[in-house]
Length: 294
Ligand code: CP
Image (cartoon, rainbow, N blue to C red; front, side, top):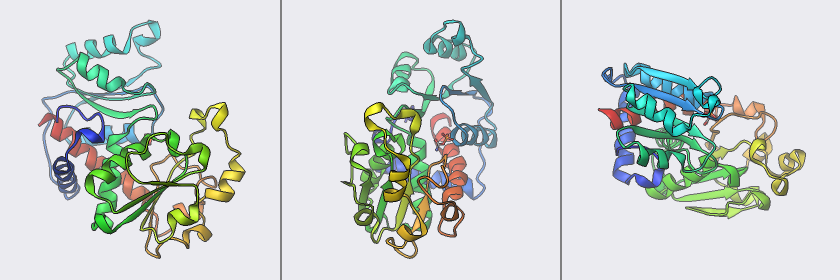
């Protein structure tokens, strides 16, 4: 593995190996990547992913730069590609890139083969490190993947998280995956799973519930939906949670809009694994960077 661009490039064996490495880091394994240099390049907002990669790098003794597109020379007309070529010339050999343009990391990886590139989210296409940390969290609590029913609920057509999760669920043999959304947010392409507009059918007896944020910033005129209608039909509440298994776990990639896609009391409940996902994200990102550089 030279870059991490999307889940479909990974074999089940490589995914297993990243999981094992991430659990080892969680248990205290150490590594020294101090001879390398990394850069976080985020052209879209982020709290979790950017901080998580930075903390993961620091735990690996990997020096990391945080570049903000607002203050960079791209404001003076430099292309993203030229910025990366310059950083590479200074010695940066790992770049973590989030961008609104789908596939940009793939193009940059071909253009600058001497740099390892991690896709930290490209438009509505892919978010592979999120899928890996989601799988790590599920596997930690419910390791019998082939017997699980997992439900993803929400704005699926605009979700790179849902896309990458479908790919990892297919690769790792998760038994049943339900993609629950109002018809206007059904995915155009399904990598794995069954699409339904019925919350009841989708989450009945589910083991894992993954709630998605309504991505207002990506909605076009034709896929706008009244939020109170959405909430009435699709929100995860104490009542709708009763449809799932009693020991179902609640996940969310964040950022959470409390009181929209999920009630605040469920975010805080004992079934919530939302902060465990965030914690695992650091260890999974250590495993990814270690795999690419060591
Ligand atoms: N899950 C996730 O990608 O969160 P951020 O947008 O805060 O990075």
